[in-house]
Length: 208
Image 1 (tube, one colour):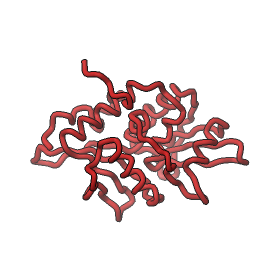
Image 2 (cartoon, helix red, strand yellow):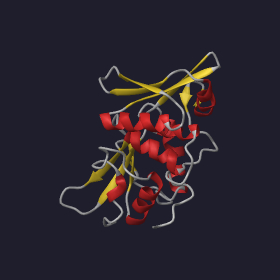
Image 3 (spheres, one colour):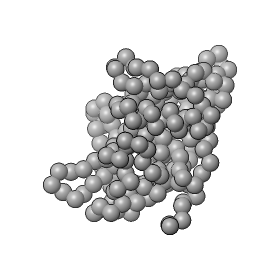
Image 4 (cartoon, helix red, strand yellow):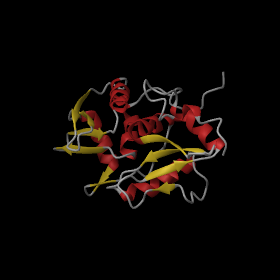
């Protein structure tokens, strides 16, 4: 069996800090009276909601499953004091921001993929990629997240052409290339139940 990376999701102990992964996507966090915060994210498929609730639970964070205004499943925590630091780190002047010391570990990346990751396949071609959704309402987070992905070895140094759908409501980072996809698989760990069609676990052998 191949040795796990120190930063992979399977090698690290679950931490509340890992929940920042949903903020890398389109998740939101709000604070109340400088004493507690609530984290929430709407997802497009039921399996994502189930998997996210399980990931939150193993970190000691209980969630409820409701329906967002758009009709999508909405995973939401209660207001909790142990999430306040996350709100403080990820917000500034009412906007979402990526902390200066942000480190994209495998566990954080897994939460990001669960919230907004999807396999991309071009019809008639062997080339396959993986898309990680960005927050369309918080474009200031995009470049810092690109830098974090480069530091994790998931994007080329230049990152040219990595962001797609910038002018839509679904901007994403595209990860391609044999080595980078293998690195992605190593970091995010195994696919949760029902996630196989969207998960990158089978991408390691595709052509770059």
